[in-house]
Length: 278
Image: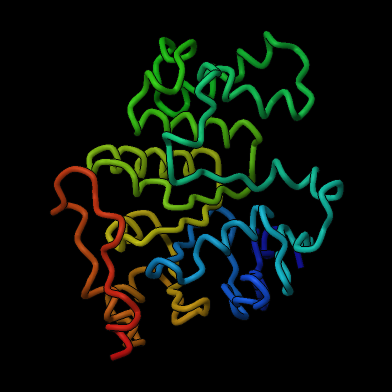
C-alpha cells in the first residue's frame, strides 16, 4: 500500500478506561475510524460521550487501554515517552480555552517560537523570524509579536494557539472544541482560517465539536458518538441531512443553528442522553 493510499490517521478498536477509586470506568469502547490526508473528520456528541478522551489518546496525553492509533501506518498507541518524541511534532493540538492555553509571561513571538526551540532550532534570530512568519500566516499583524496573551482578544489568542501548533509542522491537527469559547463572528473567522490553512498546507484535521452548524461548515466526514461508542459515521452531508440512527436525528433536532446565537454560545446545546433514550 502506497503512502498516498494509506489513511494519515487510522484508529482501530480503541478502548480507554479510567480508574475511579477502586473501580474502572470505560470512557471509550471499541472505537475505529480513519482520516484521509488533507481531509477533516468531525467528532460530535453530547458532553461526556468520549470525544475529548479520544483527542487526548491521539495526541498521547494519555495511553489507551488497548487498540491501535496509527500515523502513516505506524502504531504509536503504546510507545513510551522517549519513543514518542519523534512523533510529537507530527500530531499537534489546538485547545478549547484560548485564555488558559497560552503562557501569560511570554510574548506571542516567544510562544510560537518555543516549539522551534524544542525541535533544536538554536538560533534565537531564526526562531523569531519563523515565529513572525507563522503569526503573519494566521492573520495577525507584526504589532502582535511583542504583546502578551492578556493584550489579545479570544479570537486572536486562538490564532496564536494555531500558529504555535503549526510551528511543529504537523501532519495532523486535533482541534478540541477550538471555537466553542468564541463569539459567533470570531468563530467564523477562525473556521475560515483553518479552511484556508488546510488548502495551503494540506493539513489533516480531527475537529471535535458539539455544534453541528460548525461541523457542517468545516468537515468532510462526521462521526457521532454516545456513551463512549460510535453511533454513526459517514460523509458530513449524508449524516447530517439523512441520518440513519435515531440518536443522530435527535442531535440534529436539538442542535442550535450558530447563526441564530448572539454573543458567546452556551456550552451545552444538545439534549441529554437520558431524554434521547426515553
